[in-house]
Amino acid sequence: MKSIGDISGAFQIELNGIYEEKETASLCNIVLKEIVDLSSSKIRAFPELELSDEQINSIKNILSELKTGKPIQYILGHAEFYGLDFKVNPSVLIPRPETEELVDWIITSVGNEQLAVGSILDIGTGSGCIAVSLKKNLPEFAVSAMDISPEALRTAEENAKSNGTEVNFIQADILNLPSEIRLPKSQIIVSNPPYVTLADKRQMHTNVTDFEPHTALFVPENDPLIFYKAIADFATKNLEAGGMLFFEINENYGEQLVEQFNYKLFKNIELRKDMSGRDRTIKAQFLG
Image (tube, rainbow, N blue to C red; front, top):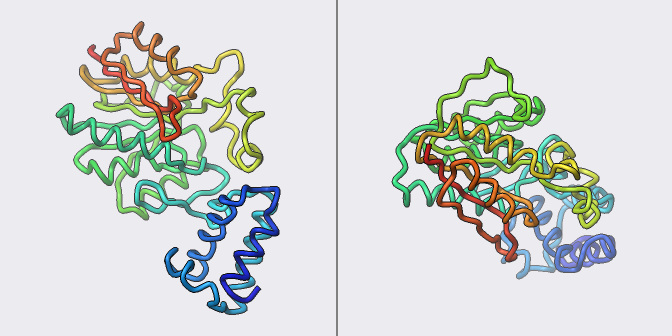
C-alpha cells in the first residue's frame, strides 16, 4: 500500500465479508480523511497520491482493528454529531443520525411552540451528544444531563468542555432515583434510553453488540418499556405545564407508547418516522 488507490483496494479485500462494499468504501474514506487530512473530493480526484510511511502504518493499524469488528468511531476516538465533534469510547454509545433528527425536532419545536426559556433535562446522556448539542443551539436554556455511569459522565463532561458549553451533569439511575436529588421543573425532558430487546439483538451487527455498552442498549424482554414508563412518570412531576417530553424509541413499540402517554395526562402526541421510514421518535406535551 503506497497510494490512496492502493489503500482503497486493500480495504475492499481485507474487510470483505465483514462489511458490505459500500460501507467499506465509506470506512476507507473516513480513515483517509482522518490520516491524510484531505477532503472526500480530493481523495476521489487523486487516487495516485502517495502517502508517507507513517501514514501507511497508521492506516494499517486502523485496518487491523476494523477487521475485529470494532467501530471506526471507537478506533478514532471521536464522532461527529449535529455539526459538533464528540469524544467517544466503549463507555458510551456512538451517536447516530437518528438521534440528530431528535435534536433537530426539539430545536424546531422550541421555536414553533414559542416555549418559554427555562430548563432542559437529558436522561441517559451517554456521550452528552444530545445535551451538548441542545445547549449549543439553545444557549438561553439551562441544560442538565443524567446518567447512571460515572465513566459516561466523565466523557460527557469532556465533550461539554471541548464544545464550549455549560451543562450540569448528574449521576443517578432514573429507575431508582435518590430522594435527595432535587431538580428544577423543566420545559423539556428528552431521553434516548435503552430499548433493544434480546429479539432485536439477534438482528444486530456484532460491531454494536460486541463493543457498545450493554447497559445503554438492552432492556428486559418481559418489560421493554421500563425506561419509558419510569421517565414518563418522572416527567408528570418534573415538567412545567405545557412542557414537552421527547424520546427516541424502538420502532416496534410506537403505538404502545402513544397509548401510554394518553393515560398519563400527555396530549398533542406525535410519532415520527426516521429517514428509513421506521417509527423512531415521539413527542408529547404535558398539560399539567
